Length: 395
Image (cartoon, rainbow, N blue to C red; front, top):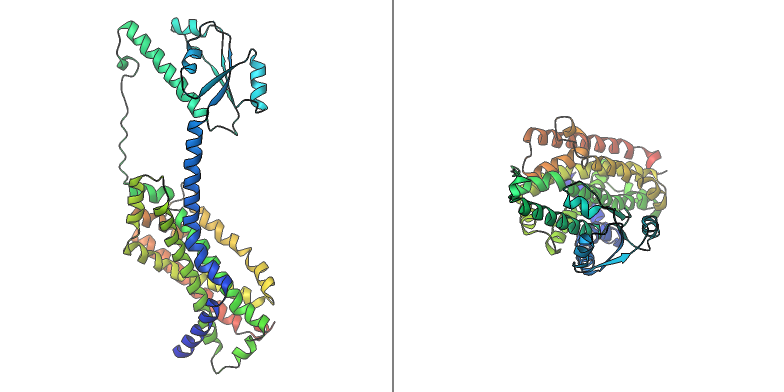
């Protein structure tokens, strides 16, 4: 039996590897997509930040106050240009029409209020759709405010502690690995779950619907092997391609992080430290039954379809049923416990976050693994019954 299964497995694996579309989806996309994304995004981010810092910010300036302290302070700043406008209504209109990006309104009596220690305000006009330079203006206003406070303290002979009697020192008890795992760790399983499914999808369509379309399924069924051997051989190839695609996606993500620029050193050291033998083994124990489960979902649908195109139209919507539970694990507040540990796909997302953080609870992890093995077993049994019906195979 095992010899027959292995023979079918090798035959289908070689056929799968000859398919360029499968190789692209299974190998090239997972390996290359993340390095390309990270390199492109990091360079784009650095370019935008550098351009923003070098750009001269033009500010529409309306002042109803005779005191020109704030105006002089702004003019003294580098890459700040004030455009004097007479009316506040015109200022708001210009910002709305994108004629100017920012506007600053100084009310009457502003300088006098500062001298009399009275509360006053200025109005900063901007569009919420374009806020790249707003922080630069706010930093200047904060610097002016600090200058006024220092002047007042100096006049009164007081120290800074008079207005700031104490400071709060935050003590973070979580390690860098725990923070990355809890906050960003859900992104990793979300990706490899999707790649695991898509990596198995095209081989499943080719090995079942493709066989029917090429009219070679009947020939295969006449071979001196049982249907269960044919099914196991084909499902093994489908599950293996999904598993390889998921692992290559993880590898591509780590390579992408390593080659990208701009990440702090401590984040890089933590991220690279996560890729350990224990992490890979814990991940593999979950991914193997997951890939078998995905194969069990795909096989009945691809057997049912008559043509490659029909199979794609049937299988593609199933992707959303995979993405949605995977995304649920990214929601803040969804914790890994005895209940979520047995919810399919959600449990993998949450378990992976805990593994990355180094806080995995072994009983919950075992519940996740057992539930995944159970799902995989159920899917195989269902596929065996479905594949055993002549009307489904020769539809």
